Amino acid sequence: MEKVKNNKRIEWIDSLKGAMMLAVIWSHSSANNTSGGYWITASYMAVFYFLSGYIFKDKNNGFPKFLLGKAKRLLIPYFSYGTLLVLIDAFIPMTPDDFDRSAANKWMGLLYSRYMLYPDNFSDNVFFLQSYDSTLWFLTSMFLTYLMFYCFLKSRKRRWFIIIAFVSGYILTFCPILLPWSVDTVPVTALIMCGGYYFKNLSCDSVSKKWKTAITTIILLVYVVAIKQNAGINLSIRCYGTGALAYIFYYVIAFTGAILWTILFSKLPGNKGLQFIGKHGVTYMCLQLFTLSVSHKVFSKLISNPVILGWIGIGVTLVGVGIVIEMYDRLRMLMKMKCNSNGLLRP
Image (tube, rainbow, N blue to C red):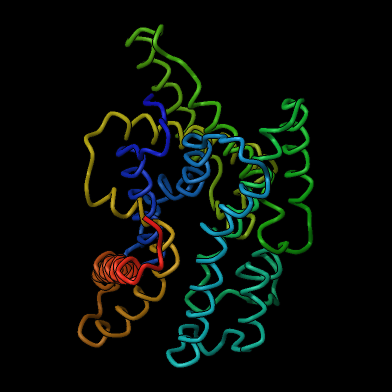
């Protein structure tokens, strides 16, 4: 595997992030009308945590600087986009009339950062994130996952840390409510991030091509069997699948899936489109439901086929969010040039 050097981006990692983000957008569109997509969606969120551990480099800058860096990267977009989307929803409602339309719940959801209060099987649930912002749970989850991962890095007894995280994650599956900021799933996502960190340092140089192929084939077979045995994964609402062994199967699916995608994309040529999406994954994660919804409202007057509508929405999302990103980058560049010309910034 290609090692991460300094802050240089690795193209295949951006491509993989972009591919997984494209899968996330597809899964939220009406084009997602086939159970075959579960082969990807079962592990696509795990890939993001796995890659975060894979590319992580401990700069030993201390916890305060680490905390501020992650807050700037994740929490500022979370509250900025979240506030904007709740305000937009007041004028262009997204949710059906039979949903809880309480404005207080929407603002509470922005603070609580979960789609709903109780697990999915609860008959009379309380809904929070429903204002084009239900995907934003990922940002607060990733933030807390990084904090727990930092504790892992600084731990002198990492084996005990892993055991405690695994046990606590299992105990939290019995929690009667979904905890704020995905606290109940953070032990799980932190272990996946740890897995990516260890996988980066795994050297296969001495392993023959024949053995690499055999090992990869075994991993693929394990992934296929686990997928067949464990349906219904939805990490955002703490659903690790079905059955008594769902918690165990989720780890198997998460690690085997992430490893397979990592191996595959490390061998593929770079794709500029996927790399762009991967570099701007936070923005695509935050704005996708808004663009998908607007596209559906506009084109459903002309087209009735939900699959076609879904793919149109995906195209609108990719182009529309891309335009927003380009406009923002140009605006930021102009502001920086203006500050430089006025002598407000030091060379």
